[in-house]
Image 1 (tube, rainbow, N blue to C red):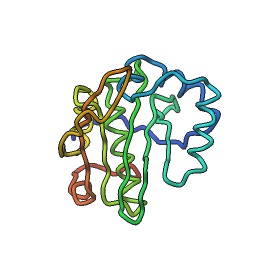
Image 2 (image 1 turned 45 degrees about the vertical axis):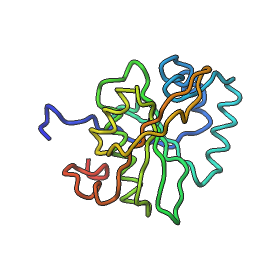
Image 3 (image 1 turned 135 degrees about the horizontal axis):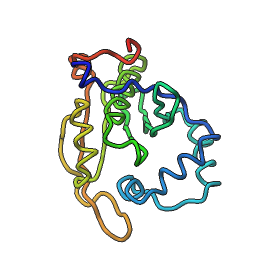
Length: 183
């Protein structure tokens, strides 16, 4: 990858209860709420969810930070199943930071954590089939489209199909890119 096409080098910092207001604002943004299937929740519920996720060893949430420490989004490893070596990924980039490569860079960092530090073998993402930006960033991060879960998501009275994409450890190992610990 040439310097002019290099991805930003964000860091991932564990989400804490103090991040609730920021996450609440991002999740309340209409596009994100629709694509992630979130309905409006009070700030107190977001705080409670963060506290619950911190205690849950199957979930890890991270703020995506620019090199100067500016939060630009959040990335999650969900439903971690260590015996099977599987986990889900979810990604949210703040509206004002979309289209700058932070999503792809964050997915690379999550994959580096999952495959370089944890004993995971498979990461899976389930965006809406009509979420072009998410499908694009997942493909650029090396995820393979496996299929469609038809009518698997209900949001605002309408059913949506979910695309199934995955990244396997051998595919991550074959990626010709610096690992997040090398940047």
